[in-house]
Image 1: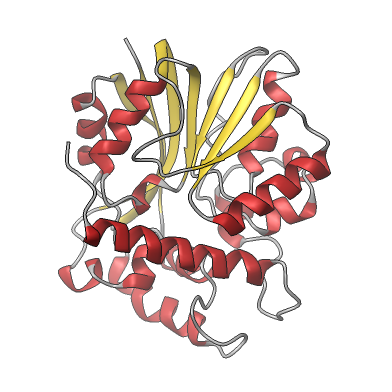
Image 2: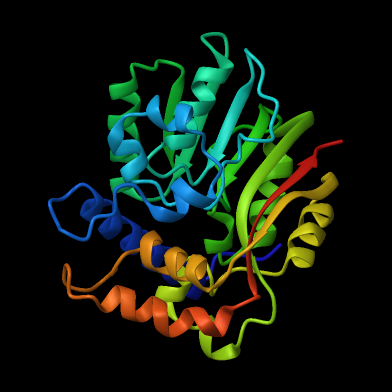
Length: 282
C-alpha cells in the first residue's frame, strides 16, 4: 500500500502552497484573476442554472476539470464525501441534492481552501455541509459511512494514488458508489514528470486511464468504468495549465503564466483527457 515519505509529503506541501497562493489571487484585485475559470466554465459541464445558484466566490475559486455530480444520481438523505473539496463548488451543489436529511462532507489539506469553502457554505446558508482538514490518502472519515464519493480533478495530484483508492473503498458503505472527475495522460515525456508547475496544474502527476481503472479494481471496487471522456486539444491544454494555476509563483500580470502554458501545451497534444470514472463497493 505504500507509506508516507519525505518526498511524498514534499509534493503535497508544494501542491498545497500553490493552491493557497492561487485561491488568494482569485479573490484579489489582481488583473489576471480569471472570472470564472475557463476550464471550469467551458469544459466541466456545469449548467448555467447551477452556476447562477452559487455564490460568485465559489466559482471564481474553483479549479476543477469536470462536474462529478453531472452523471451521479444523488438522493435526499445521502451522505456525500468530496475528496479535495477546495473552495466548495461541488459541496454546495451536492448539499442541495441531499436535502436537510442528508449530509455532505468535504476534505481538503489546504487551510486557505478550507477557509474559502466555509465562507461559501455560510454565504449559501447551508447547514448540512461540513469541511474537515486532512489528506485524501488518510481520510478523517469513518469506515463504511459514505453513500457517494465524489472528487474533481484532485486524485491526479496525489503522490500515493493506491492509498486514495483504498481509502475510497474503506469509507464507502456496501453498495456505495463513486464518481470522480479527473485528468489522465498517456505517454507523458520524462522531462515533464518532475516539473512542479505541471504537477500542480494536474498534468505531471496524472496517470493513464488504464492505470486508474486498474487501481480502483485492485482496491476492491467493482464496475469501474469511464462514463465520459474529453480529449483536450492545444487551446484546452493551455487553458488547463494557464487557468488552473494562473501564474502560480510569479508576479501578477507579467504574462509568464500564459507563456508557460503555450510552451508546454503542444508537447501534450493528444495525450491529455478529462474523464468521469465510476465504481461501486460490493
